Length: 522
Image (cartoon, rainbow, N blue to C red):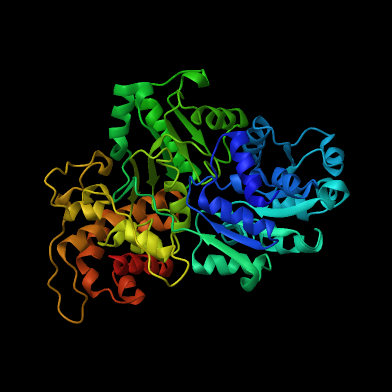
């Protein structure tokens, strides 16, 4: 039996059809080629490795095993449960693995797929030993790096083992194929991943597609990030309760996440002690394990009682929840890779869905996000085109499938749409107050030209910056009294260097540098 016949057998057995690029990836792996896979969120990349052991046995009559490197144990546990439910023997290793018999059972090859973190497989200890010896090790056919973009995003001091995953080649059988799976990879990220894993570009199969989601509408809005901007969602929860559209709200930090959750809880008058009765939930690294488990289990249900989850980057990675209709970023995302991953968790069932970014000037300040995010939030071009161009892996042309009418594409296309049926989107929240424009300053000399709109935005950015300093309990906030903010805005055209800012009466060079950055950003 060849690989194509084996794939057909599995399709008949499990009653599904492999997608074209899933087949291409599997065929490449069977040809002992390292395989670099970039497929959009919702493409079900896990199918590429889930049936590899059974395929090896069908084609070669020899048992094959697979090692999957995964970033978080909650994801491993979820994947193991799904595989076991489909009759695939799988387990995971790591600190949350409490079954003491697992190491011996792995060595004896009781499991065809084993999930591990980079730390567990690279650092000395029982988990490394059970994966690098015995029958499981002898039968190892592929090492799969799931969510491979983590190599670039997390491979520094945060989780340094990600930077050393290439060392696995020295402890696995020589012909073991290395496979990377991700939904987001630019040319530079691809180069970094391949270098880390010692993948030879000439002998590596590249299987990719642009992360384009035609059913997803993109909106960006400059905002003071007043919590009341999200009152439209609270009204939906009060009106529709368990019929409210499923929503994930991603926050930049735990404090922001907690503040939003508490605001919603008080607005909904939700004092329910039972997790099962709650409409809203929260998920971040400090959330209690029982609450994390509830959010993960409940939110995946099609008839879930949970309809809004406030989360940090820790939530949703690798977990397929088909009926999410809103993904909101409360604060500009730090990178377009992160944004594409998180926004792509909406609309996986094919229905129309919405991605919204509420961003402040401080979110876009230097050091708080990538230059690409800054450009994405400020561009007047189509947001879909901008996103797809960023993730184009080669220099060939690409064709973006744009929704019809254009007003359903993105907030920028909506402004240019002439279909006559456009309605004001509730997802853009409250309109910005135009009343805070400051008077013109009539000083003379060299200056930069600032429109009234730019001065208004600068004033808002300075207010955002001051609010962040206050939250951080920074002494610098004392220098930014209201009269100082007005003085900065009025004189902004003439503030061309840090010394100019300090000349207004500010003391701190650090504060002057940040203010100059905010002026340059508008």
